[in-house]
Length: 136
Image 1 (cartoon, rainbow, N blue to C red):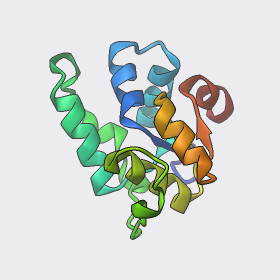
Image 2 (cartoon, rainbow, N blue to C red; image 1 turned 90 degrees about the vertical axis):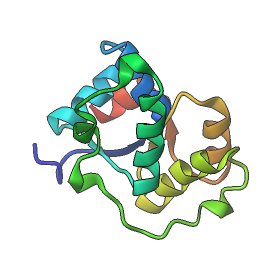
Image 3 (cartoon, rainbow, N blue to C red; image 1 turned 120 degrees about the vertical axis):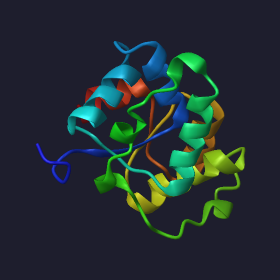
């Protein structure tokens, strides 16, 4: 399956952290699907920078192959209006919600406040287990 045919999703940083610690979990299966090209992870420079920053602070998760989780085909270069996502706590989380909304793709997260706030703005939010079932 090419990346153009693969289902698309925005993966919150907590999904990547969980995947690093538990590769057999739903988050791990989602990350493996991105690396294998069965799922296209959508990202912007801001969301990638957030993930790199967080993962870089966790010694066991300093992966050399972060590029595989941010495929070129998934880069979104839209001007995002993250300020309108005022029900989402935190500017970094607002960027993930804005990206999912603008791209018309589900936001995959285990962060309850982010999920609740994004849903209040009409974003399709899925827990990792739900996303693994519906997208893979």
